[in-house]
Length: 88
Image 1 (cartoon, rainbow, N blue to C red):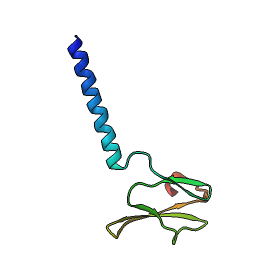
Image 2: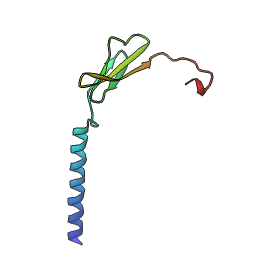
Image 3: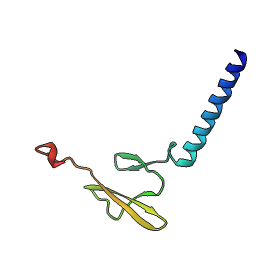
Image 4: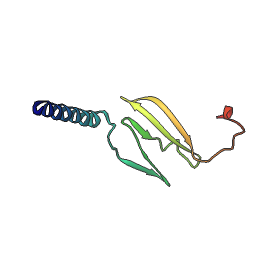
């Protein structure tokens, strides 16, 4: 019984260490919190706030990998009334 308990402790310790290492290398751990006006955001690796296209109406983020623009995402800051879900 004592050996089983020790084996479980070793296995759980190995799993926790592996998860910690994965979180640190995959970027899923806590990142730098950025601010824009009243908004706070944390960006994954290779994402930047695109200040050239950000204004009072939109926050704009770009995903750039090895100098190549992969995604360009704009988030509207002001609410817009919609009549139904299909307009979303």
